[in-house]
Image (cartoon, helix red, strand yellow):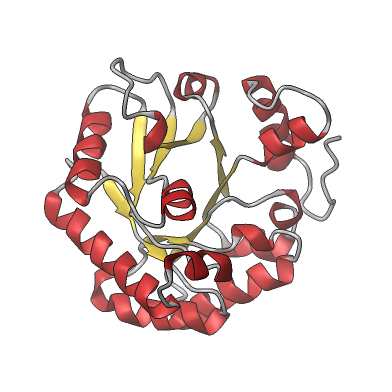
Length: 245
């Protein structure tokens, strides 16, 4: 499993071999961002949880992807599609159903492909809440997901305390499409230390380092905290629960 460290500040990406940076942190930046491999996040959690919708249209997001994919800012491996999360409290906030959030997620993905991203891979996102929801969403994508496609799995970050729940979602997806290479969004130590969860993921990202630093009275914006946390994730045996206090 390749791990991408989630960052508050784009300027910190130069300290990491693989990082995860929100487009919301990049919109006002004029200069290139020194980086290694990285993924651009669509800012979905902030947009939907805070505003109930996306403030920036597909064309605007596509333009940002093209800009950051061509200005020498590291190796932009993928840009996450503008998905709609399906946690119960998010669905309650928008007043829509899980099925409607899934439909909007596919529609945004297709629209982004049509806009063009300058060759940057668009990471499609599977959404749902119950494991069966994700299978339904997979079928809705149909042939849009090519064999061996790299695909994000959304709405699992709030279930970090129960790796079995996350594994159930991942197993349901793999049961339908074992060829897919899965990315886990926003996973924390308990989930990332679970051998089954890790075995089912190709890639994952997390900003749990920031929460860990704040919880322990340290600087939650210090990239060195992220280095320490990410090193523990990538080097310690998965059978141990990580304790970074």
